[in-house]
Length: 129
Image 1 (cartoon, one colour):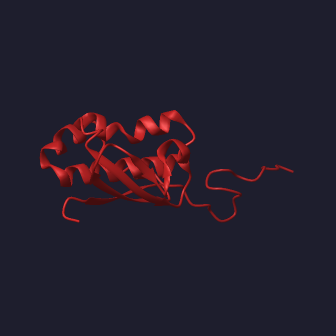
Image 2 (image 1 turned 60 degrees about the vertical axis):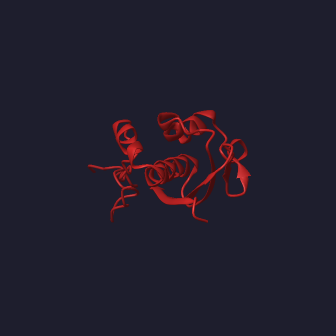
């Protein structure tokens, strides 16, 4: 389809492939509606933020497939994917999205576990004697 815009969003261990299709504003994630897929209202408001910033909420249907990570990481990945796809739709959306920090990939990842320790930072109990 010529009017379909695709983008990939990532956060933590989650990867989202997002397609923007001209439509009425339906949001489908992994075959479910956005309200079914994400349990918290705060996650949904976070996801639709790029659409609010660009005032394109009812112009495009969102079809996303997301896997890996937890719900928060998946929500962040979908949000980045939507923002990147909107920039492909119209380059003039880049400035308002960039100002709101919606085009920046959150690079924070889980720190690796170190040898001789039970976790990344946690240490085994120290015994003097």
